[in-house]
Amino acid sequence: MPAQPPKKKSSAGKILLIVLGVVVLLCIGGGTAVYLATKDKVTEVVDATKTRVEAPATLAGKPKVTEPKLVAAAEQMKSQIQGDVPGATSTVGAFYGDPAKQDLLMIAGASGLIADPKKELDDATNGISKDMGVTNFKSVEPGPLGGDAKCGDGETSGVDVGVCVWADKGSLGMLLIYNKPASELEKQFVTMRGQIEKRD
Image (tube, rainbow, N blue to C red; front, top):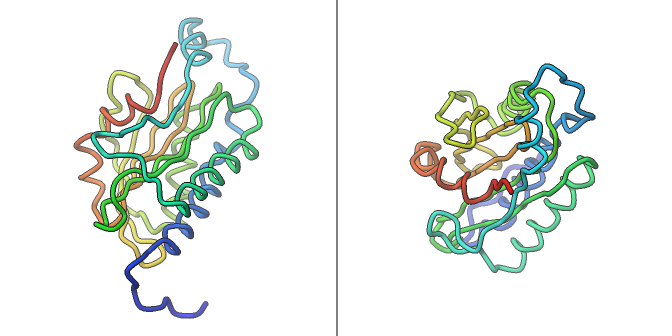
């Protein structure tokens, strides 16, 4: 591959490359399959069927980005996830913050019945580790919505990123922060997840 060009004022190109990488990884690996886990509690299954993901107007105080290229990338990400996960009941993809100030956060995810959340989380983090250079994923507090969550730092397309991923019986989602470590995400992970993942 040719060397990366010198960093320009706009990093939209690199951001788009990262988006494409994330879309490939966040396919939920067929995990939203027919629910055969009869050992699961009925209440867990019911909660899972009521789970959805959405992009709030603001996320942890950050406004949704309106820059056309990033809006288009977010829509492409949603469409791709929907195509890769035909059983998804909802999908989400959006950017928040101020790209001009290198203050940018991306969300991606899908809801649907997931038979083995731990496996889906492991598959997602293993893929991210391989393709985005995140080598230090660690478990973090998932918050009141339950399931499991992990965060880690990496570098992709010459950009430092912090990543947090969660999985539960009804959803798999990811938060990615650009030019900052995952510790910045961890501080507000539970709050942000609660703004994205909803249960009726």
